[in-house]
Amino acid sequence: MIDTHSHIYAEEFDADRSEVLERAWSAGVEHLILPDIDSESRPRMIALAEAEPERCHAMAGLHPTSVNDNPHWQRELDEVEKLLTTSPVKLCGVGEIGLDLYWSKDFYREQREALHAQLELALQHNLPVVIHTRSAYAEMLDAVATYRGRGLRGVFHAYADSAEMARKLERLGEFRFGIGGVVTFKNSGLDKVVAELPIELLLLETDAPYLTPVPHRGKRNESSYVEFVCRKIADIHALKFEQVDTITTATARSLFGI
Image (cartoon, rainbow, N blue to C red; front, side, top):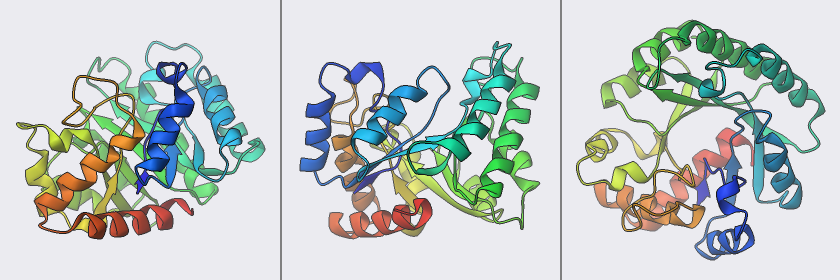
């Protein structure tokens, strides 16, 4: 398995990061994709990628909520661009980028500008994108539509809209859909969406330390729990666990070049 979205470098894991990593490896997780947030957390991400170069793969990106109420967000974008050419570790993508209008719509213009700047950087560097979308799928569809035919590829992290929206997004580029712990929640409705999407379009993720799957919901999430996501998708599609593991791992390897 590959956890395609893990913030295991976050402070929540400072006390037991080594043990958390060992549990992930023991559970059959082969690789972790580490999405970038901003300059505050970036050194921690890079340090983990340097310490585990064969298994932990860093990205470069500015999270949309790090744009909100930040007078220096354009400077942050400059740092992302710089990292793409000077990173001490090989980067596997541009992310976590996107639109998040859940908390406030006041910074939509700035978020959209940051999103487009980073989509252009991904194309320039021939890297996939990891796209965060919350309460903004219609706006995201409009944004991504402007790149149709330009070779944009990536994953919509923590996908949480309809199967119809997924099909619209998928037609605009080589896009996949990250499925995490929410699919195990009883009343989320995500299981019905997953049932309509081909396994080949899905990627496994945790978003650790957030969005912990059942049976550990309410506790800190960790990458070893991606197993529960894989098992739930297997149940939904009436497949064996090993089949979902094999297909999603191959998809992640191809997308992120690992």
